[in-house]
Length: 191
Image 1 (cartoon, helix red, strand yellow):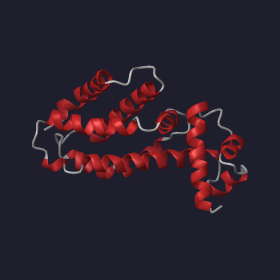
Image 2 (cartoon, helix red, strand yellow):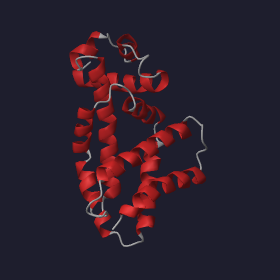
Image 3 (spheres, one colour):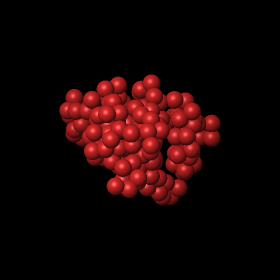
């Protein structure tokens, strides 16, 4: 098996294991075993379990950032009322978050774990820079768009996990309630 294939297998195993058992119960032996590899490969490829956790989060975050860029394409040409445009944007993000229970669960579990660090937050900010730059055109100049986006992502992912675990219903009313929660935070900052 090639190194890149082993890397992806370990990342997929980490998503599965952490989302189902939690981050503290995900041992190197379990992570490697679920990937059908010896745990030594975690150290050879990633340097250790913490780096594997971080790389897995980055893997998911890159997918999400790429999706956000696609959702925001054409934002500079918004002609409809901002609420309608924002609803369309939100619906695309919400649907993406609901497409993969394990990915969504891993994202939240890692984000709220002791492994997530401020320094890593700076790397995330760079990853989302293109989205923030595009979105900034919609907001008043003094708006902290990065903070608003973190708020939005927090609400979307934590709510999506609850929907995927069937703690709250997966219906239009839930989607509308989550949309309004986010929109009311964003509304005062729109141009």
